[in-house]
Length: 462
Ligand SMILES: Cc1ncc(COP(=O)(O)O)c(C=O)c1O
Figure (cartoon, rainbow, N blue to C red):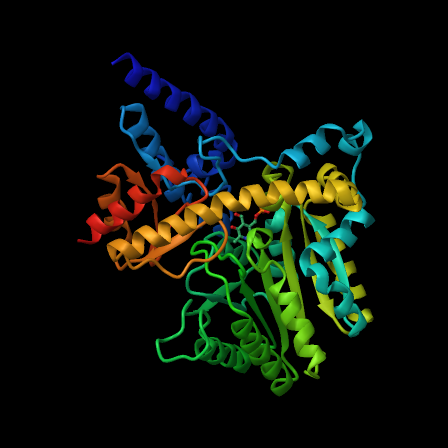
């Protein structure tokens, strides 16, 4: 009896710690989403502001998990989108943490240059392109980078500058929920194509036919088209494209740009989780290979990469990332650098300095860079073992999990995601119902509890 009570109390302490950590992140959603009077402030808020309503789905399901723990249930937490150790504490890259604590006071207190610290901007290009950077530069590709408050800042820069107000941006039908808000805030909406191809497609994990047909429609009605692609390690499914899929998509957008020479084409690669993927720099490799094979780069095509240090360096709260753009004409990349710098200045001023300083100093030294990679590998292994266990348990039980390879999440399609998540919650397994399916936060579920996730899904589907 005593032991059971101690176990419950321990769980409550752990989850209270997580609660405190997430409280800041979620405060806005809670205020917006719960018990607010829709009419309040109508005379003060502009019509667009009035459309902003809280989206507390993830918080709501996480709160239910907490309540279950508090009432003594042995509940499983698949709700949170941050990497947790198997004991439920926040996973932290210890090498980054130690380096931040040693930073000189001035690197904490001072502003960064408006576009970012030069050493960080250089690092951001390497983080985006990896070992293919030199080859791409030798092939004539020029780059520019702007430091941003996280990957979210980079997405905002792209939304604000690479599309005309009123345009549609092309997304896959399963995508990270906040994309809609970034786009709407810049006067944009979106069109979608399916995440996965039909069964008879020869190219796996990307619906090239759907992509082509939506892209063509947009080219008929817009003089700029932009598409956002969260690859590798897609949120919310964990899907990563293959080399063949990447080449087919690159080919498709290059071909469209050549055919529609008066339509600007921007391919944005959202690399929020790429450093945890099996092929972190697959896109740079594919681009280099295409150029090497003589693929001509149309001047109306831009490739831009949204880099985030939040997960790769576990500095979620230090708000550090970059937008890295690639084009063969240096005049174009220079101009883009200026536009992004000015947009940042007019939106958040400069991005925070401390992680720019620490991470660029750390990666400049071979030994500390290797130590970071060691820690990153340790954290990636948490995800790999949890994912392997989930795939194995699901296939044993016949649970039709979506293909999932890398990153923080796994996914199951569902016509009624809420009913599926409710049926799992009845078995004390808490997941998040989203549009078109249920997200399984592998990043949060301890390895020992993974089989329970598969069992809950199997029972729920039965
Ligand atoms: C798909 C995706 N893109 C971008 C981001 C941006 O992350 P941040 O702004 O914390 O760097 C996230 C964070 O969860 C994400 O899941």
